[in-house]
Length: 81
Image (cartoon, rainbow, N blue to C red; front, side, top):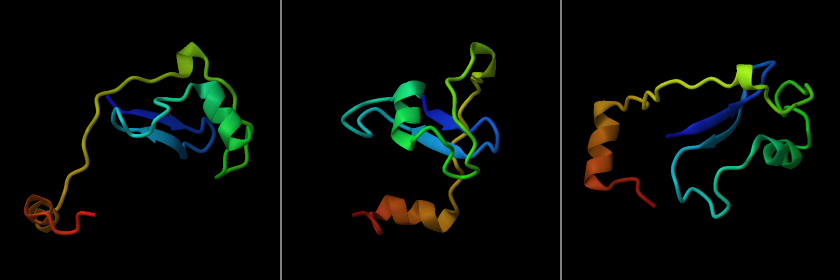
């Protein structure tokens, strides 16, 4: 299940953890992410803080829809690096 960290003020996506193996460190905690970003939102500049339990939102993941041409490119292996 993907985990997305967003700024509480401007709703800017701060970090997306989409799948296991994305990086060698795994999912960062909110405190680790705040330390990595320098304690301010890079978009609006507001001070980031550890979220309260009430501000955590769990919702079903809706994968992005792909256009028919993009889907056929993926199947044929075009554009793969």
